[in-house]
Image 1 (cartoon, rainbow, N blue to C red):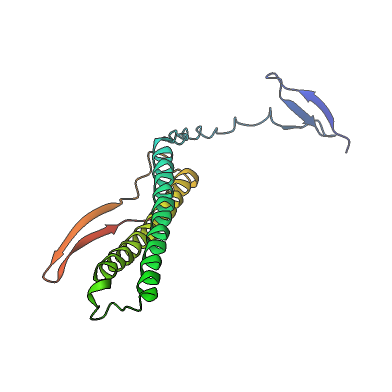
Image 2 (tube, one colour):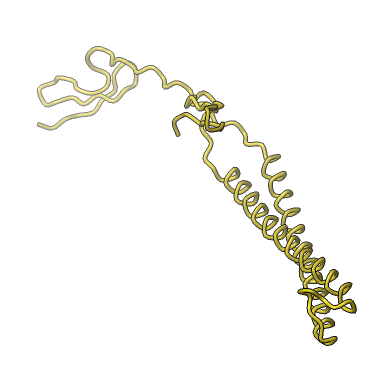
Length: 171
């Protein structure tokens, strides 16, 4: 039962059984070859322009948030100074006496300005964070080959109650 190895005419190894019969790659009909797999398209190179643009917009939003926060705090400090001035004069801003009318107007203006700037700073911080998340998501989101179409569609929707946008597709 000892098998001896030899080579067939095409150089493929052949095992020879004790009875002289050959087995192995060089014997029998040629094996059917599988066609080569279709070449897989590499993902398209991702453009870094959106990441840079979103990141820059995020930085601008952050700078706007910081600036409006500082301006809001300054306006609040000014409003507090006007309020203290009115209190020192034993005045009030509800039906104010004539000697504090101007101080009450300035207090109201500065307090309103502080509130408005505070709202703008919160919106700026939120926008900055959303833009930063969008930049990171775009940079890290896996790419799909260009030949794959998931049928993503963005469609307008209008009805008696209003309008909107519908996104239809498969992810």
